[in-house]
Amino acid sequence: MDKNTIIGIVLIVLIFFGFMVLNRPSEKEIARQKQYNDSIAALQTAEQQRADSLNAIKAADATAVRKDTAATADVFGPFAPAGTGTETFYTLENNLLKVTLSNKGGRIYSVQIKNYQTHDSLPLILFDKDESSFGFTLATNNSRVLNTKDLYFEPVNADTAQTKNRQAQSLVMRLHTSGNAYLDFVYTLMPNDYKVRFEIKGNNMASVLAANTDRLELNWESKIRQQEKGRKFEARYSGLFFKYVADKVDNLRQSGNDTQSPPNQLQWVSFKDQFFSSIFVADQAFFNTTLTSSAISDQQSNYLANCKTDLYVNYDPKNSANIGFSFYFVPNKYHLLKGYDKGVQSDKQLMFNKIIPLGWTIFGWINQYAIIPMFDFFGSFISNYGIIILLMTIVLRLVLFPLTYKSYMSSAKMRVLKPEIDEINAKIPKDKPLERQKATMDLYRKVGVSPMSGCLPAILQMPILIAMFNFFPASIELRHQSFLWAKDLSSYDAIISWGGNIPVITQYFGNHIALFCLLATAVTFIYTKVNMALQPSNQQMAGMQWMMYLGPFMMWFWFNDYASGLSYYYFLSTLISIGQTYVIRGFVDEKKLLAQLQANKKKPAKKKSSFMERMEKMQREQQRMQQQRAKQQKRR
Image 1 (cartoon, rainbow, N blue to C red):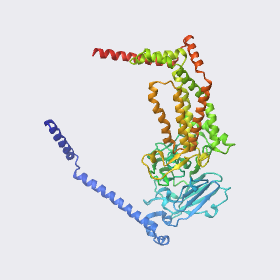
Image 2: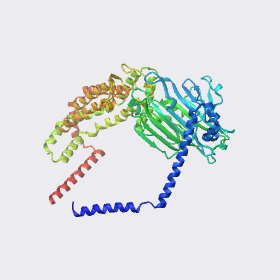
Image 3: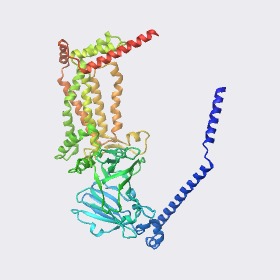
Image 4: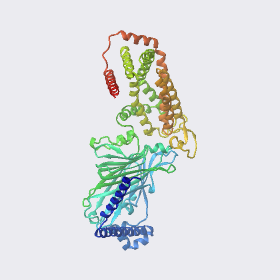
């Protein structure tokens, strides 16, 4: 170690200790910090004592607790009459929903969506028991901070709440105080609807709430159940969605953990799995929101994620007007969700259909205005969804046939020109790539061939392929629909399954082999081989062949967990494409095609296309830069 290094280390040590001495707090600062810490500790101790008292009251027998009026009043203040009780349940039910409410918290305790089942044929429950939590924070005028989820409500119309499915059902949960003030939670279930109306109505609440109360804080939390067979696949489409007031729908990240505090007011918040959603809508708006979504990675768990919202709503305890909300417990069916916006002004539309992942911009438009109408049309007179997918595939391949034909013809022209391209490469050495490229482009221009004519049709087909990739996993109509060996077109069709955890394989491939995915992979491999045979051979293409064949193999890994309906579509589409290629090949005479190209040389030169002009400009610029580099190297 040299002298300079030693001096540097010594200086660093001196600076470090000097910084510690200079920044050491004074005696007054230490005393002030100690006083602050003692205050915090005292507050925490008081809160803990109050929490212990609350737990003791909850654990004690209800009759005994009511006798201990002083202890109850100390914990709950003016809400002491609601501090203890026995949990009881009440049901609102129509032909679509069964909603169970609890008097503890006056909340929705459980929701069953009728006419649907889980993948293992059980009733479809969105949440039940402690899987969900819902409550408003109340600050009393004697410095108590309570939450409605810990208080006991009294149903005031329980005897009349049960009515026939054809009539609206309503249940009022009342939160009593020690005086004449009370708070009502009013739930109304309409017939033949997935909507539960929820209203808050107060009476003389200004006498018990803090004087500065102008809002209520709401905490809503729920675990998202696994409803489908493919846990990993379902998790990709599950999470927390929300809509800004008079603006777009957005969502938290649907894998891993995410937290956001949206800067603007929200119209609604939704906890969504692949095919079902719980949506909470405010008549006015939510503000100061904090949204959290946490993925549950345990593969043995019955839950996919935990979603939580902290929301604020305006509330004036002096005003007896109701605060209005609506719950929607719905299947994610496009027309159903879209239907809730009928007759609603554009700036107040709910836009529930945006939670269905149909794809962004052009992909979503293709699904909304082409794929879904065609799907509905065939579904109006055909009940077998395997046949519907077959017919849709045939229609789409016919629509795309002109592009397929153009792509094939471009390959054929390049193939018959291959001998002339080889001559150019033989005349111009490899160390002059720009000259080779210019001569090749001149040949293409003379015979009327565009190098992009083969790529452009393939690019134009991509939006439809991507739109279909989004459509099938989002289509609840395919759920539990069987075709051939596939029992559920919305999930994978395993023909071989195994247990245990195999490193890499289980994580990325799964513990099964899906047959439609395997078939789609096989025909994609064949299609790749057919296309490679049609391309003009050269050394560069020969070196890339292994990459082309790697694609189908990767597809097998990617789509093994995906909906069998999607793999079935790709299998059919690729199979039809192979057939179209051979049909076109049978009608194209390559000798006549070459003669036609040679005849084009004798025609007057056509005006260069903008693409060709740009290509030549780039070539000239590259050539100029190479010449400059060569001159600089000579000078050196």
